[in-house]
Length: 417
Image (cartoon, rainbow, N blue to C red; front, side, top):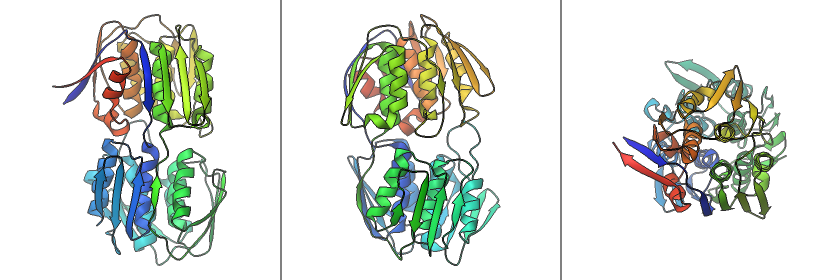
């Protein structure tokens, strides 16, 4: 078992290049199933979830090869249509094979997914949308069993702008008969990324980046070479790290508009931020001011940066209120943050944080990817030594996490126990 050992108190300085987005690459890998032949993805992050998705694709009959930051996926004429529990339980994003498999095979048997322990994320919207498109779906023995004699376009109004449901509908609709319209669609940069890839494969999609997406089905798609959009959550994590530990950082590869609201919040803490093109420069010389945060779908504040901002507020000046509107269990990690001395009280989907000048190092355990990142950031500014357990969660979403922080001057080691 690996753990992270952190000695707090070092400032951070340097430059980082942000890799491809975890929240995009896994869906793009699934989308390659829509076209037999060789597809190539570049700017692929070196994370555990990519390894899991690669193995899932292999079990579906694909040949998958990694070369540095490029992945080659050879899709067969007839993929298998069963995604087994032993892989799906490790990563919720594996549900994204549901749409492509129904489109290609007319059937899909996909285990109900696992992944991060941050609350319920039901599949009701996925299932209801597919049923409107002519799919028969049953939930039996832990599997979603879906089959159809041919997908038909439909008008679908989502109760909530769900990223996962929007992606499932997109991948099912691109080769369906007729026109599909998604109302209240998700607008995240990762949704734009998959739309652009599908268009490059020959799909007919209008309204990309808006809340109304119209898909006109085409007969077939062709393989593609596509560059994965850079990871805005990783960029935001490094920006928060510098705001907490102080110092100066240049972040390359992410447009500032992808994290516009988090950067505004960081400026409110006292950070100096300059951006242009795909470069963001962050400088912090003082203890941060606390800031209120309310998570919402894009372009609102991303839930995946909420734990990092709670960690920032824990050492900030003043008090703050963080409201979580997406995942009800995301506050579980504050119990671990309290072990470092943080003053956090939760009530339903609100967390009240009273900033402290100093935290104290202690052993803590990551419960999900972003909680793990938040605990590491807190450890970077805590007095003494912090040991973070459960770092396999962090490995699922951050490429070369320890090495990047070491390059910025942090005193952090990965240790096998």
